[in-house]
Length: 99
Image 1: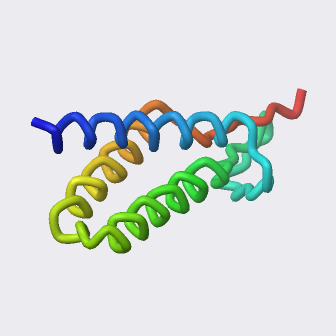
Image 2: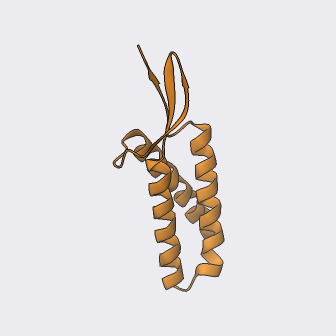
């Protein structure tokens, strides 16, 4: 039961970090996905990269606590689900209009 609660909390942590830093990008890492005469579709990668850094820090802490075998798979599941849900919610995607 404890592992499930920690996994759910990590999921929300990754999702909030992904969403927050996609809306307020500190590094402005942008990739143009497509252009049309009416606008440009851009992906802002800051949120995903910072969520990845948070994931790596959590795994490093688990490694130092010698709980890597027990906790790392659940942390990975939380990160992957948060990334999937974030992409489904269109975090990081931006359309800039030319008008």
